[in-house]
Length: 120
Image: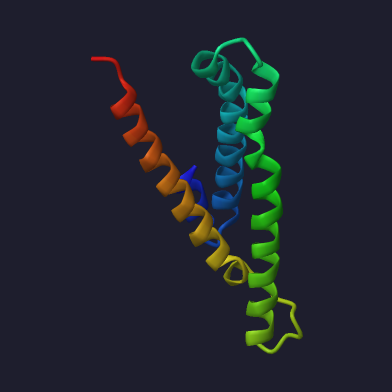
């Protein structure tokens, strides 16, 4: 998913379509895997509560990153003298870099967690 966000920095339509497909597939895979991962890690007892705690990041992240993207969009539009309106890839470049960097950090931390929790 990290690569998909950085691929969005390219202005071509094919990169947009490929990135959208990759992000959609990864989001679906994460949503599907979170159910079995929650049951595996925390057990079946109180599964509903545990799973809701695990997936609470989805609405929180959507809200925070949506606000951040809107703020950066307006800032870019004002900087270019368009009264807060912006056109093209440059309007969202900072958002894509931030999202891609956070995805990279999350992937890196997941690899570290996996290597530390692996049974010998």
